[in-house]
Length: 121
Image 1 (cartoon, rainbow, N blue to C red):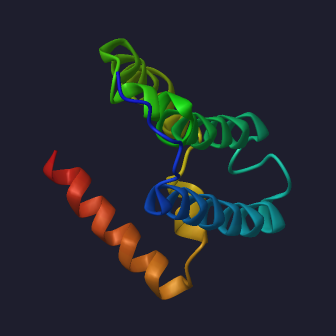
Image 2 (image 1 turned 30 degrees about the vertical axis):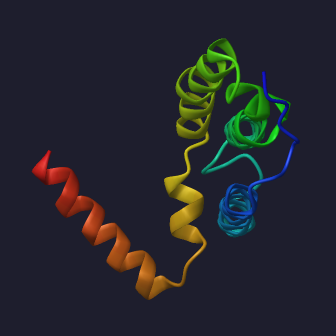
């Protein structure tokens, strides 16, 4: 058995922090306009934060080092990502804060694009 040292993957940490920053930026705008808990509920913010935390546990904890040696640890990573991270991020209602994190022109463009894509499905 090989013993792997826990070395953070900078791209996973940075991208998680960027996602948190974008969500937070948009959330501040939504709550400044609609009031705290409106537009995005506080439990949704907690869900999104929990999803990001679970993502870091799956990708940046000792579990990641173990997954190289133990198939069971690798499968725990997959289960965390599929059963925990995905649903929590979706429950966090990320589209609302993401749209409100950009300026009006970009928000209109993204909204129009989303409506076109949704009509195709």
